[in-house]
Image (cartoon, rainbow, N blue to C red; front, side, top):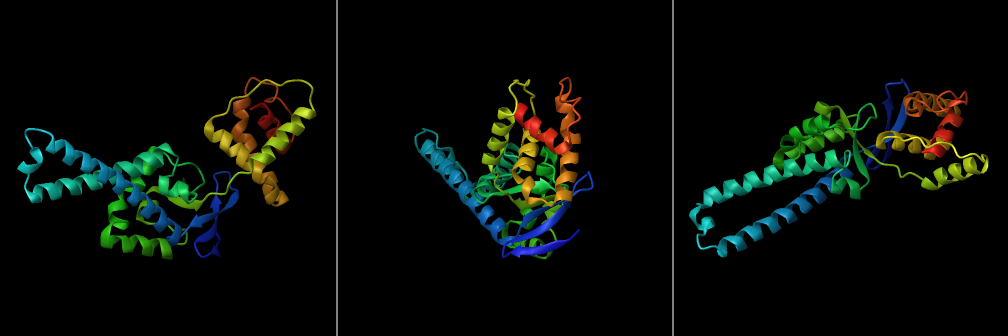
Length: 258
């Protein structure tokens, strides 16, 4: 496993995929991750402020003002519990719903993934956020920043618990895929039956097609073989399943049929 510094806020590191293929990604460092969480906290704070304001307005419009019955300590405790509870729900909900992204991460093109390159599951999201009050909130947040800074893969405590990474996403050039489809359609006068892929399979295929020219020949061939084995079950029952095309051409043909 090799790690090199690529910019002030990203490190290039190699993921050891289950198929024993090394894939290089950019791991997000302290700067972008801190900015992302500040954006998330600001958004969460805005929502809490709106909710609090509505609660005050509602209490004033009721004959039995329940807010005045609470002591200042009780109100403070209630607000603290509401803040921590909302943040817990906020991060878990968005990272589960958006496959490793919160609004802050999405704005900065960051994503949480497993250390082997696979998408995070609901359990992974819960595990990494279980430690969030420890290594991101208050004075203890300095511990999280220090861990990210010194860790080879920029992992805080929650990332170590869930075996996750936060990476800089590379935008997919969809025009390359469109070109592949046009060339494939132009070379065949017969309409092939469509093959349905899951969202994860679709993203895997199109990420490979959009970036394959950037890989060395050996790496490109290894990735094609690995992805071919992973996606071949999706073509079950079609002539593509029995095709003897090389892995790279087989993936292009699969893209044409999806």
